[in-house]
Length: 264
Image (tube, rainbow, N blue to C red):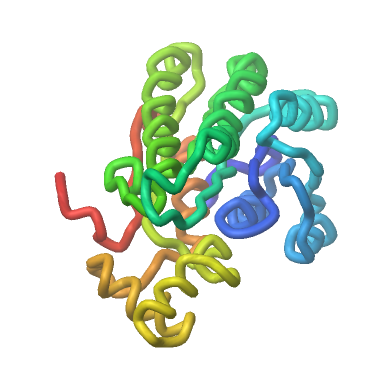
């Protein structure tokens, strides 16, 4: 199926690994001009540069001017911007609410919410000049299923989901669609890296990290399909939402969690 994304200028934040990397690859495969922003590079991102001509921009998106720098790089290089995907986020396992000081709240909000606020603010003047443009925010089911272990991350993602609705209300009449994707557990370094959630779960369950993410997590979290989501599945959904095939979809949030959220 032709998603009509060839030659679109697509900016992805948090693109060095996980969902962001999968998004950069998916849009590059569709023939988009991808500008990938991340604080550091990875061998996988460097491979996308070589294979698809992805432009990797080293930038700290948690700073006040980082997102604006990234947007200006994309516009300077291609003369326009068509799609913005706000992927950057940060979470750290907590013992509970009282474990988090103001500095940590600020750090999580800067990376998870304010990076999207700043990137959207920098991008929107260009997006309104582009026909069929869109913003896709990668939120989380934790926006609706708050979890004490990531209370700060959950609050930031709830803000991102609300921002999605507000931006859609203001900018859809000007031709910019704004939607969100809310994944459940995804097989990314967020879970699989040393010290990540899978390792913590494995220690608690007395099993291996692989067994934890393949069996324990789906069972414990009530994932109906019996498995976590793969990064490319989130990217595939984003491809559709960014394409002209979704031309009348805006202000919506799409859950991709294997059936973990049971409520209407």
